[in-house]
Length: 417
Image 1 (cartoon, rainbow, N blue to C red):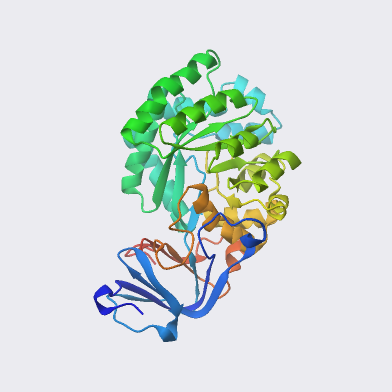
Image 2: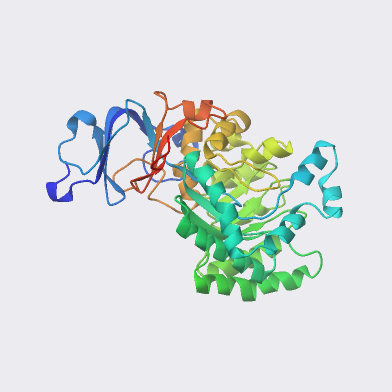
């Protein structure tokens, strides 16, 4: 019972079924399939937080505004723990070249690939980058993503990376979804990589920490990117500045990035397409979340990460879009969840937890990804009476009827159908 002087500002009522994970993540192994399902429910919100959840018939009290869910399903807002949503230009030439069978190495040699995106992005100013990113964030929001991690990484040079992070900070102020900023140390320059790593450690990381531009540092461990030793140097320096750490690991080759992440207590290790038994065992023994990115497998045609094996081994698994122009032009968190069922072998319940409570844990956020008192009131109303439609449906942009961020309805906006 909520006391009168604590009266909620919003009551979502006539919920056909409320479906949510219970308790902050990471949820590991068999716990990843556990959901609380409550028919004929209601949710009360005050000052952006959930203050009461229960059967509709048990609600007593006054509210400033009531929203009728019309017997539909209510779920927690999705959390997208891995995007590169700030970039300029496109990679359509690369896409067409790959469709003709041209290798990525040949594309790079011809001036395409990531370095093309870097050139286009570094030529754009902060205002232009924000203007390009806002429609992408709106698409993610319409797909159910109420919290979105956004990485830098297309600047490479420290000054350009700082510009990208400042663009992300502007995006935080203008986007309706909650944005989590991350510095991504993406790839080294063609020459002078040792000097570049030192510049990252001695110049870029202190500036990021001093200006509060990111909450975490990510680094790409791969043959064409950084070695485990280089990544450890950067990530330990990041931790010394009070920043959390994450890794791109095992995308094409298992080189020790997962093991490094576990050893350093990383929030997450992301990709995992090339992970095998040693990496799976290491994750299962840790609290580091393995983030699956099925859009990459779909777009590049590479084997998907072993999500089923990871869950069965006892690891905590999350799922993200990896929205980026080169390897995953995927603008829907709901579709990423659905692909995790089809490509990574998760059950619908496991995929829902992966996209909510576990994705929140991958960002070190304990106050979202569930519909529970004390959590942020990030809520989805599905245009469905069965929550499994979230994992079943492909390409229906009207599946998510309403989106609430911190108790405010942000989709559809006023005047929209």
